[in-house]
Length: 133
Image 1 (cartoon, rainbow, N blue to C red):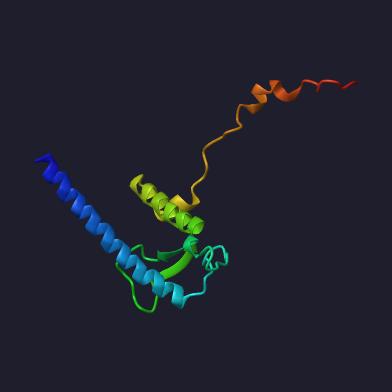
Image 2 (cartoon, rainbow, N blue to C red):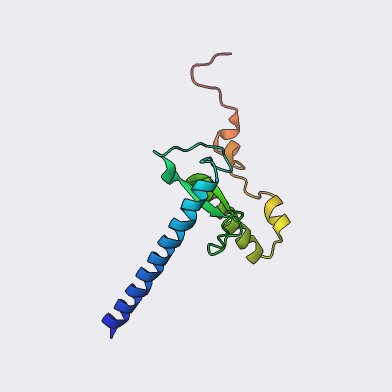
């Protein structure tokens, strides 16, 4: 029974991956024809040699929303694309913690990484080795 269940799961995953690859190939090729090969955030330019580092980002985060005019797409380099999705994840976490979007964006930092540094350095009153008064 476990083998049958595992085989079924493998087939479902394989089909989902095939569908995703064919869907991505379609809109990626369209986006690369529509837009200049430049990251929409950092402005980095791409050539055929490094084009694989340029990704298609869905502005509304819906990968099934692929209008032919490209209005839901922007080309982003891998780094800017990762940053965009990290910002979305941070906003979701802030909302889950009860913050509104404004608080999440403009919250104050509470960490004080150097608060005990002077104590660790002996209040900074020691003379450097080799110095004379």
